[in-house]
Length: 248
Image (cartoon, rainbow, N blue to C red; front, side):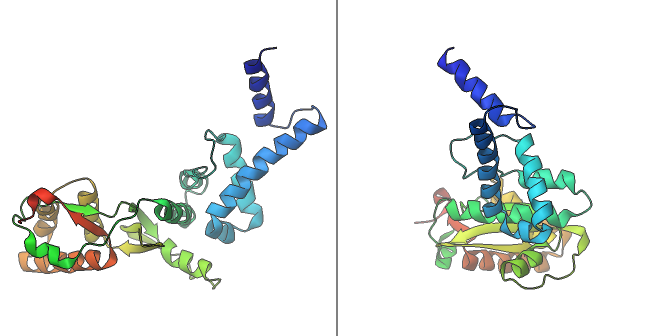
């Protein structure tokens, strides 16, 4: 038998469900493969594990593993779409998949590229606010949410009793990024999140703000956007400006 055929047969027996009736050694490999993947998922999704409890979490992890064999040499990225899997499994409990997304996003942000903070005085050198583009933190991950999953995550991570689950009619945004060696996250109201999404998509600052200005009185919108920009700079969400739009 050729080596490729042997390897293909070995992999087929490892992935087979249920475990094949073969040698004891093969059963050890069959179990070890799943146990290692389950261990990696438990490490990544620590707060979801706490929230669901041992039995439910491990049952969902096993179901995910059977449906999604590992395709990478490294386990670092395995299970990154577990949140989407849980969204299908628990459609009436959005906090579950949102907790999972937050667990994974915080790990991804920590491993992302570093970026220096932008000095607020750089704004004074902007020569054309109509065309300037802001560079967002390269570690930024974001999504829309409809539960209080961030509050649940904070409580679970501290070993505290989590608050009651709340689901809101209006969607809000959840942003995850890092400054230095610390990953962080914050919930954003709809308008602020819409602006972040527009900037993340590459829109110029003026174009991104235009829709928000139309939804509010000009003076109110200008004041609010200015406050957001100041907060983003302080938090490290905005880390750069398009150099072509800055005066010397």
